Length: 318
Image (cartoon, rainbow, N blue to C red; front, top):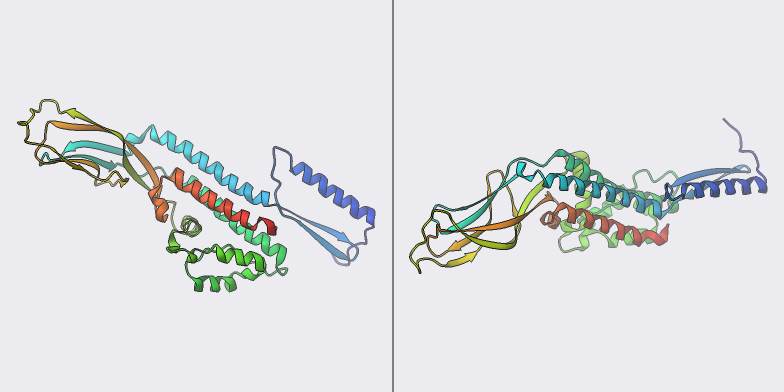
């Protein structure tokens, strides 16, 4: 197909604009809101007018899509909790000296792969929303046909960011956006690898290119520790024993070899006293810096909120 586009009169152009508006309204119905970003090309005279309708709502929609996976993950975790005896075992017992009463936790098997798939989808959609943002900025402010490698970056060193600006043609997003992006870089933080945007990027890259999203199982003590008499064990002479202390209540990583979650320490052998306690077991993201100390249902929402706040910082530019 060659030759110039046919010249269109004002009424034809107006009709095209009305048609675009009608389609926008159709896309904006409650069942399909927000509308997908659309590209419209209208021939007007010998030239082609390109109208980009980009909505920040579409980027936030991707964040909400990630939220759907987070909700799906929560449902899967609730189902897993009903079968946790297949995966976790906690044994309360005295040690060989009878001076320590330990709660030892064992990881019997790894969590189902389905949890990795769901978490990976949530992480990818959050990270993709940032890349979609960068592309939209480059499309609006950049030079045509020069935006192929543009992407959102999260660098742990200034030199990495300087290189990324060239490698990913970040000048295409415009000076104001580039200034905001630089202020968001992890290298401004005391520990860059603990910045949420850096953690998100690393988790997404690992899930896409290397391995599934990995989990660690942790357990921590509940609110009540109840002393019980050990059946069939006689009490020692009064004064022969006393409480000496407790272990830390912090979450403990469970292993297949076993790990002491909590212990009660005595000054002398105390075989007749035992304890009962409820424990909280959580699955945590592996390799997520400080977020690895939180359950996945805490860490993923924190990453989601970080992406939402990041999008808002660029909202006035689109």
